[in-house]
Amino acid sequence: MLAAFAILAFGLALPLLPSWQTDEAEAAVSQPAAGEELRGVWVSSVINLDYPKAPTTSAAELRKQADAILDGAAACGFNAVFLQVRPCADALYQSEIFPWSIYLTGQQGVAPNSAFDPLAYWVEGAHQRGMELHAWINPYRITKTAAEWDKLAADSPAKKHPEWTVVYKDNYYFNPALAEVRQLVIDGAVEMVQKYAIDGVHMDDYFYPGTDFDDAKEFAAQGGGYADISDWRRHNVDLLVQGLDEALHKARADVEFGISPAGIWASNTLNPAGSATTSTYSSYYNMYADSRGWVKAGWLDYIAPQIYWEAGHKTADFTALLDWWAGVVSGTDVKLYIGLADYKTLEAKAADSPWYDGAEITRQIAACGAKAGVSGTIHFRYGSISGSPALQRVIKQAYTGAENNGSQPVSTNPPAPDNTPSQQPGGNNINNNQTNPAIPPNTTGELRVFVNGKQLTFDQQPYIEAGRVMLPMRIIFQELGATVNYADRKIDARRGDVTIKLTLDSKTMQVGAQTKTLDVPAVSVGGRTMLPLRAVAEALQCQVQWDNASKTVTITQGAV
Image 1 (tube, rainbow, N blue to C red):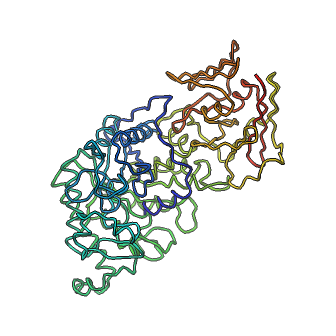
Image 2 (image 1 turned 60 degrees about the vertical axis):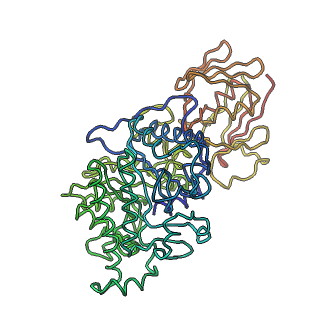
């Protein structure tokens, strides 16, 4: 369900940053070591969720965006990237089997310019940064809507063999019952491991899209040994998984093959071998994917169930599912990675949500690290993390131990920012709960910033750190009429006769000839330098008010 959740997250996420590569600091390198836990992140290409941001043939732009994501992933402590290279029976690489992806260049079958090969570039870039690169494929999906059928390239396998396809709920899929389809998927995977130094082939959970899939004709012809069409469908998927395992390891013994199934194989209310959950939806009965059976058969090197619920969830408790999956891999040589739903942090708008401010992700990372049999985690998805300062902080803290760079542990109930009136001579008046009737109601629950009555928009959202509102440097200086320069982690800003000098991660700020100590240093988050509001306001002699009820900051400029 990675792609399904991707669409959900796409509608709710904050704007995707143009890069997670900072213009202020170099990314750290995360070098996997033997036996080290895997710390992975999914990078989605379907409907341009993560890469590329929009279709383009520009090799320079594709390189730039790849570098930004790889630098951002390494800076946060990830040591593995799962790049979606085949979202819809197409490719983000040079293939003799599948056409170039419509999400890459805007037209299926059209290559990037300058003979640029994204997958080759990503593999080299990941390895240079000490990260693994796993090529993530969707096995059966051909289109996202039926209207896309006419946009398929003439050499698309689906166009060349329409008899291999089935229309299901306005989408086209390859028919899992056909041996030709299974061979197509296997051949495509083998082609990648033979041409590219990828570390693994990764398949998501799109198998049979639904129980009412139109394959009665095939079942009548092939299913004579099965009394139940469900068992026959599971057998068809089993043949694909087993065939991939055998073919991939024959082609390259060192490559890993893994699958990320839906988090619930089956609840024990439906199957006595299932998990202590009560959900009626499961991969075994709804997608015909016997993920537990694949582990027991040894057809996988790793399995990464998408446990996308919080601890204590009524029908799908995270802890119960973690325990169950650890039991499934026990006694096998299949590694267990847990897929985490980072996108839910973006959806959580109120402090009473367990996902608010990254709290549930913090708990789940800790639970996975403490659980015997768990070999790592994979986060869904890059865009959710790059759009959330809270996620960046908690992930960096968990994976790098960083105490700065926005990675302090965050509370689910942060204190009100700057909640005492300023007594500084700059003329500031930062008050708590000062309702301003001129400010419209806050319907989003997010922090808002008004400068001289104008509401600002940010590609990196403001957040609260240690009781201080943190704002993007360039936007706030620009709105206040200040010029700013950045070089070698040093920030120089000027407005009128006022000069400000800061250094990234330092609590010292120079205002003219005076040296001031900051409560919170300037930090780099999501590719932007974030500054404490109060320090900026005092330095530039602005009037600042904080309305706790509406989570709103209002800034009024004074002359300098």
